[in-house]
Length: 390
Ligand SMILES: Nc1nc2c(ncn2[C@@H]2O[C@H](COP(=O)(O)OP(=O)(O)OP(=O)(O)O)[C@@H](O)[C@H]2O)c(=O)[nH]1
Ligand SMILES: [Mg+2]
Image: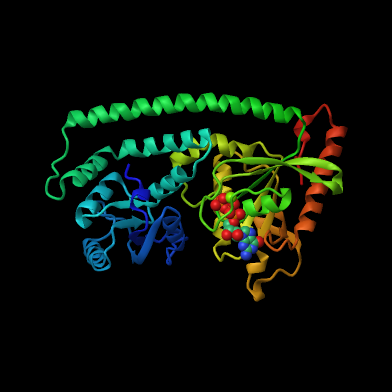
């Protein structure tokens, strides 16, 4: 796989194809942020409308010519598509543009690879990348050849070489899976130890860049990495949070952010990390209330939660960044409820940055934790009742 980071600050053209899906991002804003996070420099945005993707090029050939011309004029060295391309489309587009072409999935994998810090995180990303790579072997070979010999020398490597490579990758996948399952086993033991401590577990979850780590730092006075980029956090961090209001400590975890169309391989690979969310008694679903796309982001988060079997864990919606909300959108009340999938979920408005609403949030958490402790004492023999209701 060609790492984007080799090409740091590469002038890149962003391409979005409106196929009539409800959430088409006409500004390609998120793709631009993803590109910047990966170290690319968007120089132009091109959008077009199609009923269906072209089988060979994804876009029409006229549009492809237009992009090629633009790339020459702007000196672009990468073309980035917002939609997932098939290996064939990607190969054809690269031939057409004579430039590397990547899609959103690749970009997300790339960012995860750059950011993974823990042993487990690195293994998870490695697995997802190997799986992605295994479907794109032929394309990558032609890419390598072009690097070596320049245009015109491409003829395709011998079948045996590809076969060899494929075998190597599948052996690699097997080995990575084995190493991961060992790490997972350790994690399971740790989790069991934590459960034995009878802790009340709260997980911060939400769309990437919503402010989870900033809120985490505010609540537990930690110094987790926060940044105006996507996927600043990849590894789960857990700290004890003492709630004086309930004379009780709870355990608070900061987790990886979710994003639209999270590559499937990644969800599989990150199952263990995301498992932290499943294990919680309460999910603090953090939302960037100043982002006009927040309803769509809530939808996406709910979708991933359902995918990992965490849809029934009680949630508290934390509408963050109130300080950055327009005057006319400022909330009338600091807490109310908000409808998600037909259910009214408790919601609270805060600013992790200015601390507005944080005391109220602590009170709320204390009340929930205290209620849990009470239930715990009352129903010692029916632990399945714990935290069932907010
Ligand atoms: N204006 C404003 N900005 C905030 C607030 N909370 C966080 N931010 C900013 O939002 C950006 C993202 O914050 P993070 O805490 O890194 O977000 P995150 O949800 O942990 O993001 P990932 O780890 O990437 O998923 C940073 O630039 C923060 O400074 C807030 O209450 N108000
Ligand atoms: Mg974070």
